[in-house]
Amino acid sequence: MKKILILAIAVLAMLAVSVPALAVSPSTYTFQMAARMLTDVGWWQKSEELTASGSDVGSWFLNMPGHSYLRGRFYSVDKNVGGRIELGLKSLQPETSVSVRYAYGYWRVGNCRILAGQTDNWFGSLAYHVRQYVGLNESAHLLLFGWGFLWPHRVPQVQFTYNTDKWGVQFALEEPRQKTNYFGTGTDSTFMFPRASLTFMFKVGGFMTHPGVNFVQHSYEDGNNTVGSSDSYNTWALVLPIKYTVGAFTLKFQGHYGVNFATEYPFYPVALTRPYRNGITSGDIEDTTVYGGVLAGEYKIGKIMITGGFGYENFTNDAWSGKNGYSKDENVRMGAFVAVPYQFTKNFGIHPEFSYYSHGDDPTTGDDKGNEWLLGVQFRFVF
Image (tube, rainbow, N blue to C red; front, side, top):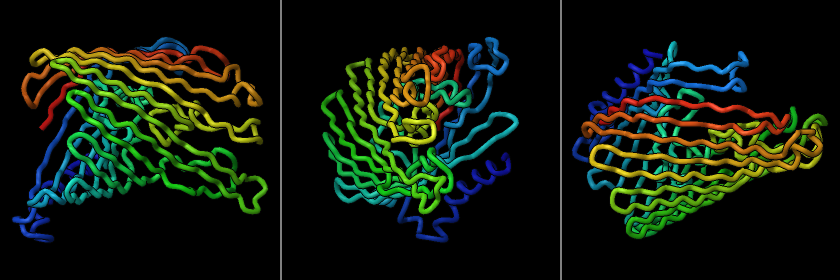
């Protein structure tokens, strides 16, 4: 993997020199590079319900989380055409890895923009993310994703956006993420409607919001296969984020409601957010309802910031306590954090943080699923 990382860096560096010679003259575009190198150091404590030994376990961790990156941006001279390539960098010994975070191009005409490629969009916008940074490599803890904050992740898509300084609208057709058949073997997975999102934007003074809806239909065709099942179910979500800034204080909120988040929206537990049948092997499909939200505040004093937040998620499905024989039909989990980041220079800062996560009760047994906490600091070099 180290060879892959070295090769990836070399390719990006060579683009600045080779692309003009191979494609267009240097006078018709500009090229910029950026990088973010992060290192997490801390302690991760898990209760007995979350460990293999059945005892409370704590352990030090020190690694390079996967939201480190190497980024290249391309612009035409008039800035109307551009592109972005961003490689995610991760080191969790004994392995290192490189992933594609962004790879897209766009064309802008007036207030309109057409974009195509691998990216996220306004739905679940990261403009509202909370500053919970420590622990991505430790059970995927980042920005309270799946613990109150819904983010649909980056996928290949085609977007159309119209926006002014005060308002805008964006429509995107996206590749679905969930392609697993939960209801039988010998079937073909199909999509009668691709994943799509429609999001609006409004700004007034220090107030901003991006309300939106996301939808995809999952279908299965068994043909003449009697062991399979022809059926369909939908995944959809409504999201309402709010950000309000006055002076040194910023308030952030995101609320969401929808069904069947499993895999389509990452960082959610699949077993608790997928659809189920009324019976163990047959019956109508029952949607798993998901709703939750996150609330966070930030107060900046010079180079230091004080921030904290709380997240809540509720998963319910009537089929659990019905014919499937579960003890409960609901799971509630919560997360919280407090952090005091300090920016020494424009390019270097540290982020001390404490975060806590409660997994709620197991619907199958009614027993506590456990809790965990992390205490650590992230070293952040951004260029």
